[in-house]
Amino acid sequence: MLLNGYRKEIFRPECNPSFQSLHCIAWLDDDIEAVLPYLNARLGGDEYYQDPPAVTFRPQGKLITVHPQKIAVNALRDEEEADKILEWLKREINEAWEKRAETVPSTESAPKPRLLDILKMLPRTNCGQCGEPTCMVFAVRVTEGVKGPEGCPPLTDQERGKLRAYLSPFRLDF
Image 1: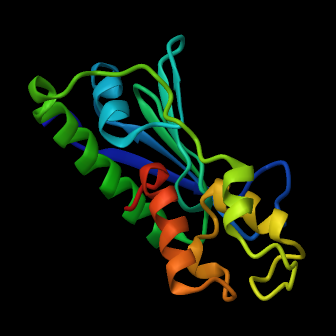
Image 2: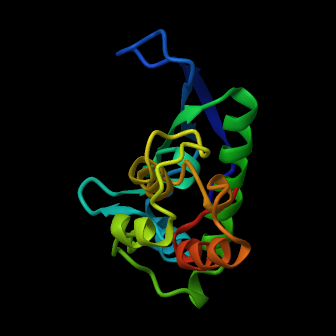
């Protein structure tokens, strides 16, 4: 086991204390720099940074950055969600470390879904049933991981399946 534990700090963003979402910093008990390329290979990080080393993930509208001695997560609903994400990451970090002999480490950033590809799969009626003012805004939310195929009511099951298949390589689930 590489990562034994962490100490978390939950807070509201200083730039706008009225935000409803929370942020979390988890101070790691162990330095995990050596696992970052393996974690990136396993989870397909959105961005990999060499100096200083870090890998970012953007699942479900959140920004998660894993550094050698801390993990930062934003846009959290509550402390329970922070715990769920941190425990998921701890498992992933330790599994990536345990299976490093079977994994080709990667310092490459993952491909990202393309906005126009998503927009082409939508009805482009700007009906607003998804809660967004236009299909373009909905497509942006999909690229951010905030919305998914099920968020567009006018899509048929077949169209929803096609969009889900397109997005599957870009998703993380915790």
